[in-house]
Image (tube, rainbow, N blue to C red):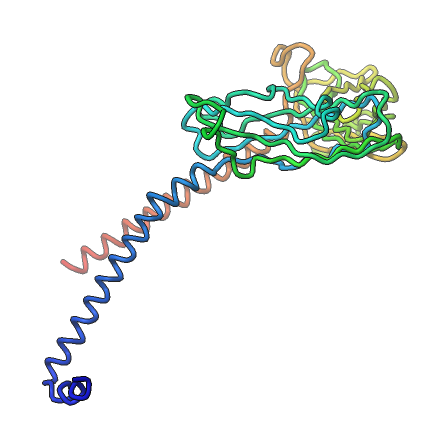
Length: 340
């Protein structure tokens, strides 16, 4: 039969061959569509739900608690993240460390807690307290988070180990003094009659307490064309404990100077061991009395500049949209006239 098939095909009329070819293409497209539909269905009903259930993790997935001295206290905040917080989520945290080291580690949430419905990022602060009698040593372990819906238990087969919800922890205890710190500063808006004020956020990542040595403040008119005053501070800076972040406000008194309402330019530098740790230079505002709460300053010119730029951008977009609409209207009118 196979020998006659080529002869028969060769004798088929041209329109019959064309019809067969078209039918073959149509059947091929049909099978392709059916195959794609099946693939999408499999992904929707089997793979997609698995990816949704696995959308739970932790950031950052590591804690490096090095340079800890005996008696030191260390803390770090991590975030449990979920993509679809559609229900309350029970969480149990488990440590994998030697028993004596497990006693050093605590969570501000406790080791069993619930993440409320609707919360995508849930903070957990991990604290490590090294005993004063501890000797030099290094430990490596993990902190694992197990999850289950709030209406289920956390025992047996109902527990779902969340993918990625594992934190690697390194703990190193030693007697070496370790200095590491940085700071962010903002010039604050103030009221008339107040002294210039600077908000400081000090990050001490070392294993000893730290503080600034001195700071200098230079005051100019709004355009930095005229120097108005100079102030230097050499004491009164808060001491920031090891492995701690602290926020505070530093005031720079100006002798025999009353700052009236208006805009001014300020430049400030903070020093530690004769090195500049942090600096900033920007415009700040002096507001009428009663505008701010007593003893406080408002966030200064960074917010002001942001809103100013945002307003300018909004105006530009509005003008552009208006011109575009005018152009479209004119083109439509021209088309109507040409058709008429």
